[in-house]
Image 1 (tube, rainbow, N blue to C red):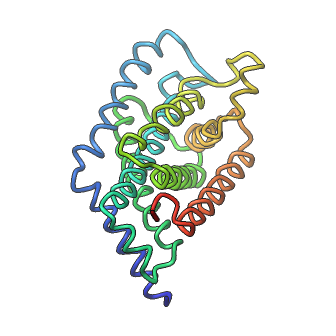
Image 2 (image 1 turned 60 degrees about the horizontal axis):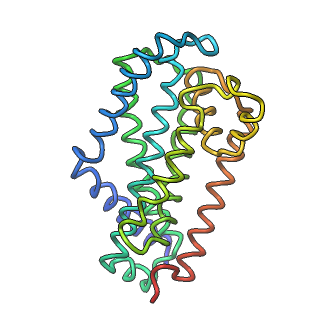
Image 3 (image 1 turned 135 degrees about the horizontal axis):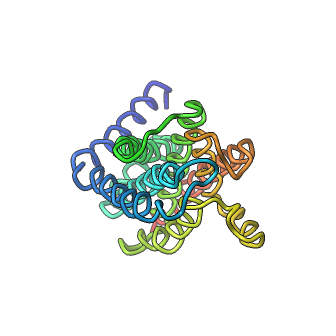
Length: 257
């Protein structure tokens, strides 16, 4: 398959995925913004006023990066897992599988759609946060890089979940029992330096901790984790998930009878 044809195929899948969630923006974009606004009111203003500063920042400023990235993570994942599983359910993914389309284009197209939703929701949530606090970006390069890479990582994770899912109920198991707990325990609402040493060490096994701290460094200039280590872990996860997704499609896991 020629590069021009692959490019058009990738663009077509990406546009399809984009239109899929943007048509129902009241269900896909607005609810995360409302949810985060409630977090700011409850945790940032009501509870935060009783906690005090963390690393030289007010509590509401400190939790802004985590809340933004939490929205990026959940929406990038949700878009890819629901879209790919729907394609499986309606048998449309089988048409792509038997076409000359390379598997990496299929993976990249669905992942790009998930990335777009994660990024758009993240931007909307960032705008909402400006009504509650003032954001002064410490490093635009780090902020944008973590923003995009995290969205890509969880879009790929959502696709893998969709490959294995056999029913619509299966696509909610991982987000409910694994993704949500890891996100909340990833340092959104606290610094791991506030934890006892044992729990600090346990927290280091949570990959989301590295993403949130890298993003917090980009916005605020403070982090509990070495920045280089954080980027290495993010990139390794992206490479691993991408290759794993390719292998699953190559074998036809969850698709071939």
